[in-house]
Amino acid sequence: MSRKLSFSMDDESTDLIYRYEQFLTGKANGYFDVEELENIVEYYLRRGSTKDCNKVIDFGLKLHPNNSILKTKRAKIYLVTGDEKKAFRVLESLAESTDYEVILLKIEVLIKLEKVKEAFALSTKLIADESDDLDNVCLDIAYLYLSQSHHKIALHILEKGYSFNKLNTELLYELAFCYEQNENFEKAIAINLEIIDIDPFANESWFNLGQLYFALMDFNKALESYEYALAIDATDSLTCVQKAHVHFQLNQFEEAIETYQDYRKMSSFGNWQTDIFIAECYEKMEKYDIAIQYYQQSLDENAENYDALTGIAICLLEQEKFADSMVYIKQALEQNDEAADAWVYLAEAFVGLDDIDNALISYIKSITLDPEQPDTLFAIANICLEKSEFELAVKYYLAAKVLDEFLEFIDMYIAIAYFKLNNVTESAIYLQYAIDKDNDTLALYLEMCPESDDVNTILQIKKFL
Image 1 (cartoon, helix red, strand yellow):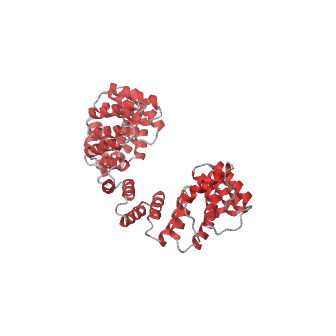
Image 2: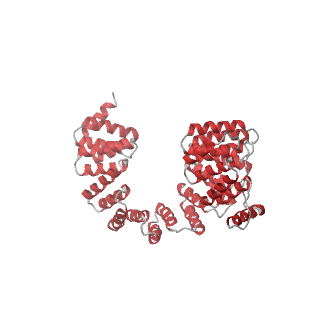
Image 3: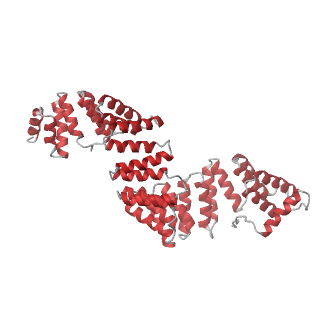
């Protein structure tokens, strides 16, 4: 089965277009054969001029009535302009064709009309009829499914092409992509390694490996992959920033800062986002004043910068500058009052100012926006305990434990709250849970709740049961 080559302009084609355009002005003769008309259509199609394409086809069909090649081009134009139904009708009107381009076009139209079963049947037949160039046929078909995000079908087809030719790197790239989209990261890694075996300087595959290892949280291998990619192309800014992110994940903050600075020099975009990354590194290093400087630089460049505002607020909270922090938190909430984390920061500022009532209001607002916050539920419970609202304290402690049973001292605090409710039995049960996790918990419990001798007695009895 013959496969058509992409249309490209050469001297002969240039002369053809010139002759056609001269014909339109009446300065040249008006006969063109079908192949010439096909090339003229492709010329205008590549330039996005579908109106001119249709003129050529109308003219061509007058010269060559009912010509299937010209009708196929008409279907292609309908497809380009988003009228899949008209394209389908044109293709259905044609006699059964073995032309490669026509069959591909039918598959594409069927996919876009969501007639996926029919498209797959036609795809399977096309693959079965091919023997000499199966890998490239599979690749052409897979592109059509990938364009509509049918990753599983594309994967199935690409695997057939891969079994035919394992050295087609273009196919291997798409196969690795499909494995990734189907969350089969290990196979995606294996295919990228095959590409590198074929071409050790395949920068894109080294980068893709880094992304896959990053997704699997194998940061050391991700770092190694990004370094290989940068060794091949030291100007690759995307790889550079990803390498910096890996250093951050590995708590290598000085290296991350250095790499982010390298990225700043490469990037043609504004620096406000990079300044946030650098600020976060200094924040992790507890160099809060320097972190604030970078957050402020980011804020100066982009005034509507929620991350910079909350970043400054966090640094000020860490420095116990609670009132100053509140200024930035309120600005952040003016930008987005549905940001659950900002309400938590506001609550922490109120706690620092000993305003536990407003802290409680802010924490509850945050939980209303995002109920999946065990630390925030724990903080609410602690305030309820402090306010002697013991039933509420138990409620929030238990809710926090459901989300994260490994919260530090959660069982001990539940035990204290139950004891305050005079529920000695439940208190003893949760205290036993706490002691099972950490033998030193009992001493801390008795220090915080010295009146709980009865619970201690129950625990001693349970040890002999």
